[in-house]
Image (cartoon, rainbow, N blue to C red; front, top):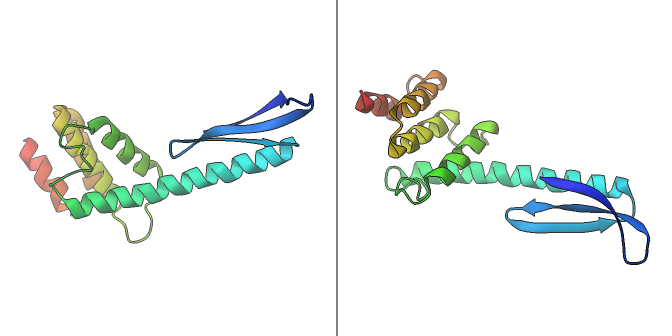
Length: 147
């Protein structure tokens, strides 16, 4: 995500730079000491994780609220890969309180795999959702539909 590098500034003094992207915006900050740069890197990486967790919650909640109408434009075929990437990111994080869990993310991934035409991967995703929550009706219905 973020990197700390040592460089010589225009005054001939060695400094340390933190460089990376946060939500698509390039971040580039210079520091006098490596410790300051490392601390800033840690803060920025924490912000990135918090942003990813918030986006995961929002993505999953939006997907739940939108139901079959849209999966964040993914099921329209426009952004299937980006949708899959978002749900895979969700699976790496702990779901925030009050938001749908990993079972819902697996089910959404199954929907996207099905849209891509990969029934084997869709089946595996639906089964993963049912492993987490055997009573997850959408996953049960989707799995029946595949057979």
